[in-house]
Amino acid sequence: MRRYAPCLLQPISKMPSWHFFETVCYANLTFSLRKWSRIHALPRSGLFLRPLLFLCLLGGAQTALAADFEWTLERDREEVQVYTRPVDDSKFKAVKSTMTITASLGELVALVRDLSACSDWAALCEKAENVEIVSETELYVYTLNDLPWPVSDRDAIAHVVWSQNPTDLSVTMNATVVSDKLPKNQGIVRLAYGVTSWVFTPVGDGRVEVVSRAHLDPGGVTPAWLTNRLLVDAPFDTMVAMREVTQSGRYANSSFEFLSEP
Image (cartoon, rainbow, N blue to C red; front, side, top):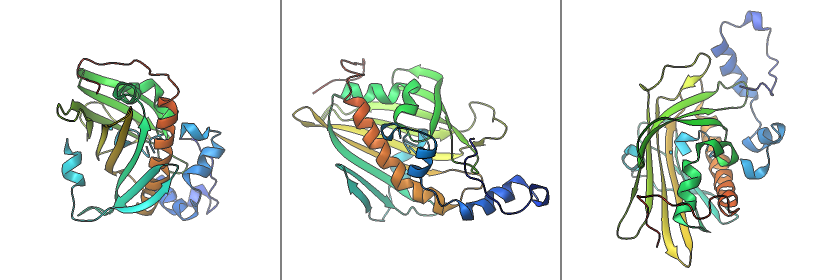
């Protein structure tokens, strides 16, 4: 956790606990993800995605995200749309982001599966690595996410499953957070709940519709207003970065046994 935002509230010695300090400091945590990224000297293309938490930018997703609430359009810019909506029995909103880009299915799948590249496009992702590879379409992934100080960093372990619809050739990745694969790290809050899906659907003329849905509870002392604020900036910047990296040619000619191109 990098401490860039000083919070001059009271002497440390008078604070009952770090968690109290963390809670009170949120009152002065008014900088946005974009401002934090400038302090962090990150290029715009490198930015939730980089999701608020990379994994919970990785199936329970469809069940958890299926609600009676309508999606509300929060941003429509640079051919990227970001929507949010409430979720029953949760103080955190679900988020959906969409765009249509020129790319192959293989390029998109290769980017998401390249864990070493998470910091190039997934918001706040510091590192990601495989915990267990069950098969080409099933694996467990660990991700460490560097959040703005004074918020504690978060890490997560996700069960990731890939599939392809044989009818329309759409590719889906569903990820569900699990908690029993690795011991917790001191000073880092382990994500206890999160579901995410990526769907890549060919729409003709070499173009693919990209849709990401996610709902998570970041755990620890993290107020809903902060998480919900980052729900818009982070998915938007992630989509823009995904488009730039994919169209750079880095993953050209990528292929997988389970994947058929249109």
